[in-house]
Image 1 (cartoon, rainbow, N blue to C red):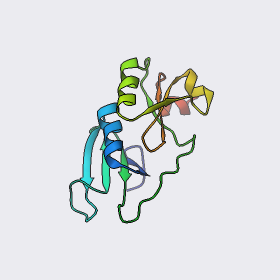
Image 2: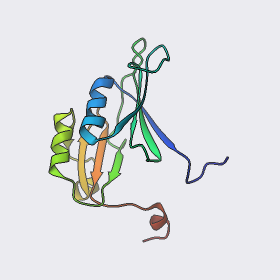
Image 3: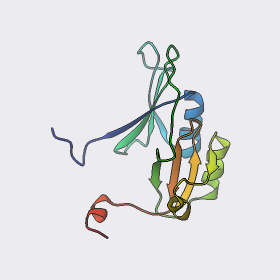
Length: 142
């Protein structure tokens, strides 16, 4: 099967602390835990955490190998943007901050105009955008 619009996307990143990451992404943003795998490969607590919304065409995989930990190396351009299509609720930003996030100015001022940037516990920027997005609309130039 060729890659097409129905293909699921996995975004994988190293994490220093899967518990802190889960706190941010699940308790803060509201994603669900989709899967966990222990260091020995069995389902359960441990070295791999997948989070996302059940019906989304993407999920975020966070990994931590206790035997050979890899330090996350986020750059200001390693954005995960969630297009809300409405103003960013102050309560959501406060919840993300309570669960380990840090609100920061965006590296690119565009995102300060059109949203809020919150750094996750591993330093990766999450942008909550007030805009909406459509790939088909972008292709048509609208």
